[in-house]
Length: 206
Image (cartoon, rainbow, N blue to C red; front, side, top):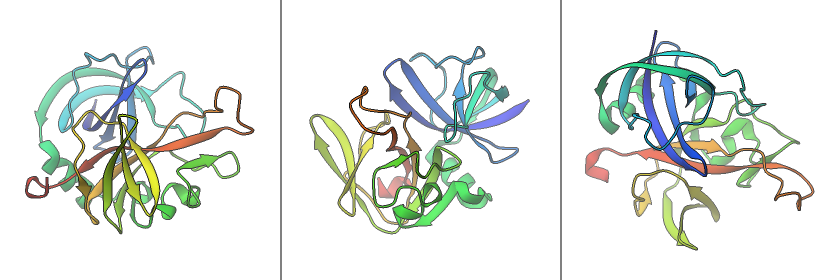
């Protein structure tokens, strides 16, 4: 059995994407159902939950960088530790290169290269990462979608929680890379777009 801390819940065209941390190993994971399929909107997981579950690498795990896919069978919900519990875990455990502090360019093995996507020329070894930014991110709405601006880059927010006007420097932000996409065949190369899936602010900063 594994204890998983749920850290994100984001929108997908065909369900929801739930991210977690394997508390025993510190591994960042993406939960699928017991058959390796996408989770449906009624999946029981909420941000801050700690679950006891059976977890194994999904039979249909995608190619790099999307290495986090896990088949999961929930056993029981232990508790909900809230945003403060996630902050405590991330700040007090060694997550290695899955936690980066500084400029956005340093995230994802340096493969963004001042862009909001990665290409086949530089593929990072993972698709989810915590980031502690060196500058604040400011919220904007464009075509009824939520984005955050960092040094002129417009990063899409895909989480369920309401957007906040400003994510301060020094906060913990969860980043993810979307699936490989080629503009439905209209682009010359595939890319994975950067997304913000969540942030973790003490209650006094929200």
